[in-house]
Length: 181
Image (cartoon, rainbow, N blue to C red; front, side, top):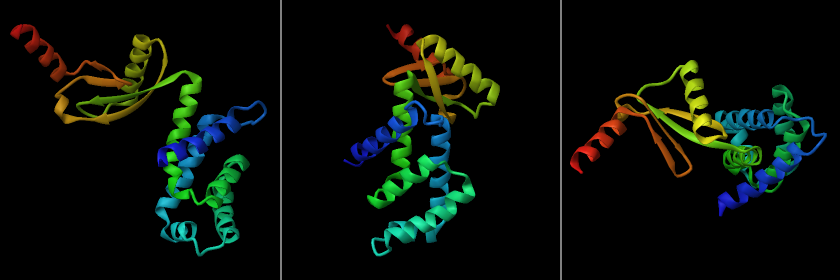
């Protein structure tokens, strides 16, 4: 249920961002949502104010306005945050931000790839992996990288239900299957 609600807010925000004349880039909006979310997580006082039903909405808006002016948040995101505060959905901000990114990716034809490697990759390696996945899928790819020591070496990527396994563990499993058959 919460995911459905987050998705509705995210789609409404995406509609506003991609409409002609908005003057905003989806990446900017994502970054601004993330910035506010990090501020919210780091401030117990702010969380207490925004999550308390006893605090008037006007006071919540005042507190948020002070923070947003310091962080140079766009008017659109500012107003969006006011809407979710007014509807008592601020606790869903991370889910909304993730759903927003997913919605934008879908509209732009970008697929999300979960990429695992035996050790953390440097920027050049990340770029090479992303380029190869784009070549394999024929689509733009947004990669989320994670280290998984169980892989021993190489890289494994999952896009939707499809797995691209170039790890040593995957190669050994394929070799074992060929030898056993």
